[in-house]
Length: 590
Image (tube, rainbow, N blue to C red; front, side, top):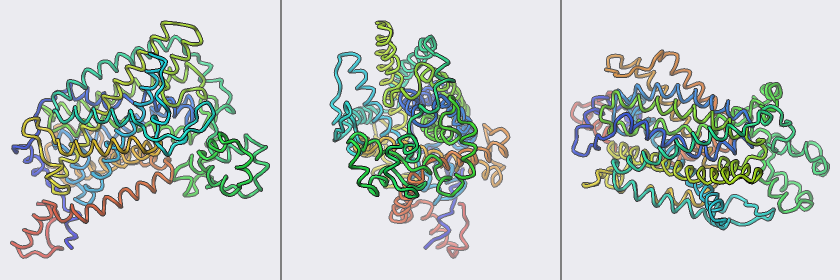
């Protein structure tokens, strides 16, 4: 086995030479288009759906601070992305950068990991899109999509307190089919569609901030009793339900006992609860869940006092809730790095790509903080709608005040949310196809599927169609929460490797021309690694286990196909044959 191939780096000179071939993508995107792509990818499910759920279940009003923490982590990574994207403006994003610095094996790992960031996030947004469609139809016509076709079959659904078995999230499948068709046509048409959707979305977001601020009550930020927070785990549930706790023998509930395990261990307890109560208990995580990986490693005992020290009406879920909230809303920031996947299509990538990355991140962070402040200020966080929080907040206020104006505003917001999430799907899916294109160019994926560019549309049409079909399937049948956590941990891992790579390349290749240089790189890059790792540590242990399984599957694909078809591997083999080198003597770079 050619072990040196695992760590063989792809020289920057080869990356730049690849841009000159006949299969190069069209350079049609300027700084405004790139910023629009970034804003289009960032503002979507994060504002219109996740803000409400994270506020209600994880962070409370402190979701505003969670967005700030996630924004800082993204800003640190953004400077590193900008340096890389300006230095090597080719398709591939973090995959390409890792190949140039850490070698082929790490490049494959991050490329496979980026499937979580892009393709899986499309599934999440499509699932949230369907709930806003349901809200839009209710506000407009008084119709509701049947719950059997509005959720995945694994997530319990309650309709007026009665459990209902869902079959498939049908609207999510349909919207992804439409997005796939649009992307096959071409980047110019896709960019135009996205620009229109982004304008609509920004108008709606500003509308939410301006109109919603009139109905903000600071009492909702500072005075909602901590005891009204939603139940966070099994231990918390038993403390609030002493009648139920009395049926559980002392010492039988530990920090790793989940709601499902509790009912399995005590069938007599399950028999005493109604079907709705059983459903609620089954969804409860174990106590260590809120500390993520730290809870399993035993650090929870040291951090628990900090959790209680800051618990207040503004921080009802304590320090752990604040950090879990940051790790989850981090999902909403993935759009800025998608700009780097379009560097090969930028007119002047050395200037335009850094502008697009940094501008879109700053704009969206400010908007996130403002909107999350409005939503948590308009109604008490325990009452926030979990599926369509922004539109539902205005609808409930309209019903309370009997205001036709507010009712109309709820309709506008629901329509804007649909447009906003559609643009997220457009840009994020667009980015995934470019990742696959870069990997196929290197021989790590089949070129006949992922590397072929349509002769007329100049788009990777086969890859787009295949990936679109997979996303349709995933968005229709897998739980949203599971996908959200996988997207977050995949994105955080990508950011960690990019920050490490830009620092390593500064050390190993100081001679390379850098049109944009990350400021204070020896401080910014290590901080980026640490902050993003810290947020990863607060994600649940089962999310980490799924990540390990996902990476193991990717490694099997690499060893079975990518390793054998790698262009760099073939070049290594030719060097050994022509120069008489052994595998251990062959150089790491061409």
